[in-house]
Amino acid sequence: MTDKIPVKNVTPEEHQGPELYAKRNAIYTRSFTGLFRNVRISAGIVLFVLFLGTVWLQWNGRQAVWWNLPERKFYIFGATFWPQDFVLLAWLLIICAFGLFFITVFAGRVWCGYACPQSVWTWIFMWVEKITEGDRNQRMKLDKAPMSANKFLRKFAKHSLWLLIGLGTGLTFVGYFTPIRELPKDLLTGQASGWAYFWVSFFTFFTYLFAGWLREQVCIYMCPYSRFQSVMFDKDTLIVSYDEARGEKRGPRKKGADYQAQGLGDCIDCKLCVHVCPTGIDIRDGLQIACIGCAACVDACDSIMEKMGYEPGLVSYTTEHNLSGKKTKVLRPRLIGYALALTAMASLFTYTVINRPLVEFNVIKDRTQFRENRQGRIENVYTLVIINKAQAEHSFKITAEGLPGIQLEGRSSVKAAEGELLSVPVSISVAPEDLPSSANEITFHVEAEDDATIKRSTSSRFLGPAVLR
Image (cartoon, rainbow, N blue to C red; front, side):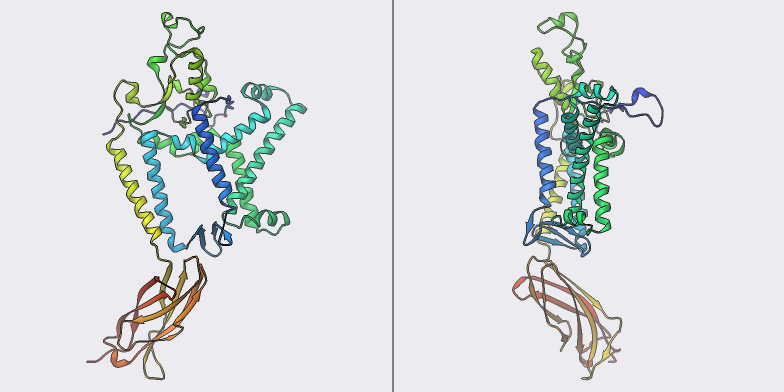
């Protein structure tokens, strides 16, 4: 069995005792600079631009990404998906889950620290807080001060910008389900549906609530990922850790002093790692359930080490094996297993999407078993359902086979626009003497007349009278 890293369940409310509903302590983060902060900002900008920008892209005269729920059509650039394709969505979610497992086993909670929407939006809200109320000490002083015109204006500006960001988030999210270019105008003129008003308000409010007020509470208490992360960690997983052997004993000292002669380690106990942490933990207490792996403490500690003239990396991305002096194993069975499963599923998913049929074809037999027409032939009635999934109009030829002398009565050629669903009633007739039994299998074919690669076939039953031999 693979050893698991013990996760210390330390939260910002730990000191408040065993009360079930402990009051939240406000966390005042301090501004800082560093490599991992720059990486996080770059990743956040990319994700923010993708979310806000993709919805405005156009493709062949329509919105490029549009989940058209009323018509049950889901446009993703050059592809149209239907409810029948939702198995692909389930498949994609499973692939994403395995991708998250792989990343977690290899590098811990980097998803939480760099790419999770809750983290990205929270960092944006914290930046707004800084530009409106000042840095850590200024915000603490402002909150303790009595209400004044200056305090009111700063708080009003902060909450107004928070709500504005929330509104932009809500509009964008709803814009993936309702044409975004008409949505703002319809909302302002009162022509939008009630559901549009509801969902825009819903996502505006909860963006404001989660990123502005709850913040670390979402990560610690509401997100299930923080609860099962330790199950996927092992002693070779990259995690943000404090090198206790190098840092202890902690204590202040003057720059250039012989601190080792005083029995001190490299940690000067400045608590900057705590002041920059968005969840308010002390990484020196060990791996904790509240740690999101953002490496803010790494940047902060490295800046202090540089000022003191010490080697960086007192707090760093490392492994438990590395901290104990053992060699870290990068390739290990569980990581390899996740990688192989992820590669296989992603390859099969890509192949399925690329080669999925561009026409959906189903046959619905009429409830009437059979009838005899004027020519004395046995006749069955069917409804053919044709869905053109291609991004262009096509003319489809309909044929049937399976019985001698089979004849198709009705429309043998239909035209379908891109994404159009057609219901085509047809009848099939066969001479009684050509029926081998009372229940026979026949096959319908549909093929695009201008593209032989777009075709589908499906079987159905042809019923007739009992055959006496």
